[in-house]
Length: 454
Image (cartoon, rainbow, N blue to C red; front, side, top):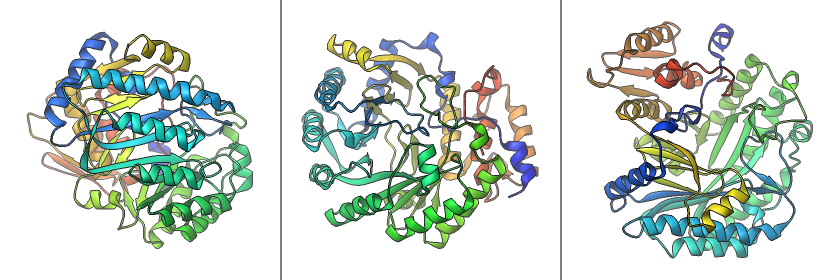
């Protein structure tokens, strides 16, 4: 890859799981009433036909992985399981009591933290409590994240018996030096065991999450990790860029510093190597940082133009409403966002008082909805288009000038009212999205909020 392009475009930028991004949410126009109204509007427009998505955040981990930027609580005390499950069920009941009819679930995903920190028995209890208040869409998809070191065959069977057909396992990298640096000692044998067990039980999509740009990681490590991954042939692979954000409060990113991280150029070379090896193994690139076999639903959604992106990442289908349950979980009504409190004790207090535990959010205005559409198009399909009335805001000349510069660099091709990101430009899709990000343009952050784009 052209080093001058890396030097030019390797800047701090959002990952665009939402627009506006969380640091640019406007509190002034947000209230609990406004959030509830936006959800009720979305529910009325979409529940009967498409259903909603449900994300459940399970924050507990037995040990701290120092590459992780997620909200978690480190403990070895499994007595925390039942109180947390009771609180999540209460929060779900609060939402179900708000809605005028039974919600129809199209997607349900368990993330964390470590969902498999919880026992199979307790997970069975939680899922059944959720399902008793809902109906299921005909083409529903349930998924969960599993830790290879503690996911048992009973975990896999329990989830499967409840309708789960997709599981992803966090692998990151198989090199021992890298694993020690990120405090994630995870033998290949454990990944092999859970992958083969999941396939034998009948899961139709087994995913592996890999990361490049980790401390002490080299191209040789990436090559070794992907060679081992090819042995197991997961159905989809997330090949993430390590997001170094140690300034975020509560972040566990320590035990190494920036001098231990690959340079922007070396990091990009790791990605290009990994991408080439995955292509050779029969994987197709899906959106940003994702790869899938042709048999996987993520690939099918890409070729049918159904690919969607939200706070759960890339999904095989779109729902207008997504409800997030648990500490720090984010909900999306399409017309608004709402994030839960991040402290477990605060979360318990609010749900026990009968209060939906939202701490902040954003109600999208007409401009936000237009920009959100374009950024979603770019992130999911590498192209977007507009009418003269679509991009009406004052910053249009600035946006077009920025896009012209990117076109001259070969990152995209523009036509009348449309643009397409080139193969050369795909690694810089976040930068292209930033050209449309009016909140970012109008208020440049005074301190670093985002990870680097390369």
